[in-house]
Length: 336
Length: 242
Image (cartoon, rainbow over all chains, first blue to last red; front, side, top):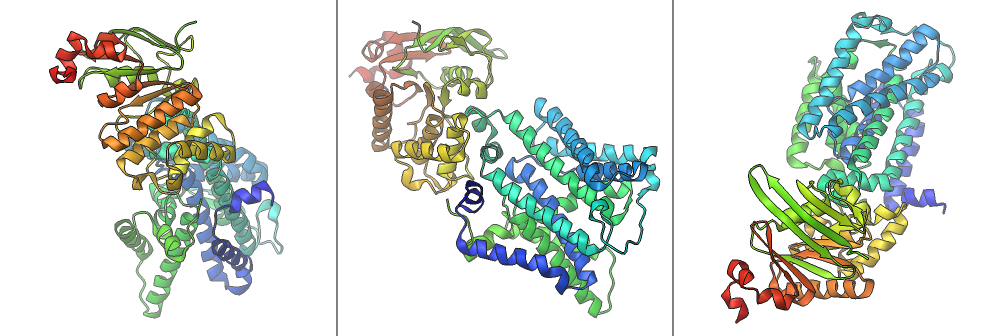
């Protein structure tokens, strides 16, 4: 077995691997099984699973609470979209700019916070502040059409153009599925590396981490920058999937909160938690939607009220999140 | 040929309070050196200055011939000073093994080699069988040994132990004393310890420094120190000589 495979699967119970394999298999064939509507729901699930994992690296691993992750989504989205609209540069090349922009933003926030010892709640407030700052800034940025919104040309392509991310939802589905799997593997590799151990040490006790020789400033910077860079890809995807961007929507604090719901419900700091949480939340929301539909009731905003209730229940009953609890029940928890 | 650790005229003031007042001592390579004194004497403050938690207001601290006062704690650790905390600070959410791996990763890039090192250290400290438990599940004596293990895993030349025996039962104290003696004897590890448990101090230390109100009131071999008039009056009490 190659060392990288060993690092990926070492210590994971066989039945967990089998379940994971079956799940990936199901996700691969899902577009053939579900209708158009469910496909868009699954894209949304994967989108939140992806960002939840990216956020989890910063909060779940390194213990740095970001309540402004919409910033990185927005920067990724606007950078790639503007490059496309103004210069015809496709999303994949756009990523080469969008990711560094988001990483730079993360580095600036991280530097300001960690250099001047802004920690805990104050750090979280700083992340909100910068995201809000970006929202107001983009409202007045004429290059991206300010508050009137940036629109990507929605051409009806008869074929899937992967290079320009134009095509059928199934293509977007597979792009997001691939990204989610890649980030999952990446998170696992990080967790099993020196970087991962150091992040966990910082999360658990920063003073003790420093006394163990860890340059905590540097490793917190790594965590923020990795998380920001990963998140920005979701922004690029968002721009090309929805084709319209408004600062009020993209950067709003509501978006930042939405991002952290899945990991909170699934289990912060766990690998599966953010993915699992995304499925649970959207799944339950769709179930509720269907239920209300059969009774002919339509309550605008019920989804968010429902998310709030789910979060409340989880925080009270299973503060570690649902996944760790399930993993213990089913004997899926990792052994050393 | 200087000592491994040299503390020269070090002082620390917290606002008006002088916590450590012009203290000097030297810890020779390969010895076990104890710092004793009543509560509030400035022992932990002294420790924190050596370990880089904060800088002294005056004086110098040299380690292996190099100034380390004012360096950050992670930099001090990288130079070869491992420490424990008086109020234990294990990584509670991590397993015993993971705690020690964090320490071992300081001089090892790969988790695999760090784990091997961690296992060696855990065996030495009688924690190997508990390696898969979470640190939060350990009892206080185990947590204290875990702190020592984590510090040892960083391959220190000097180990700073801040009251690792406080709150332990005599049998547990003897166990740690035996482990420390073995470490010092086999690997030549230099140990600087703060301790209230005189039994342990007498069994381990070859030299003792006594602090009182931030000042060094005595320094010498265990035999000399326990007969010192000032030490008996301020700290040990008359019954100690009985």
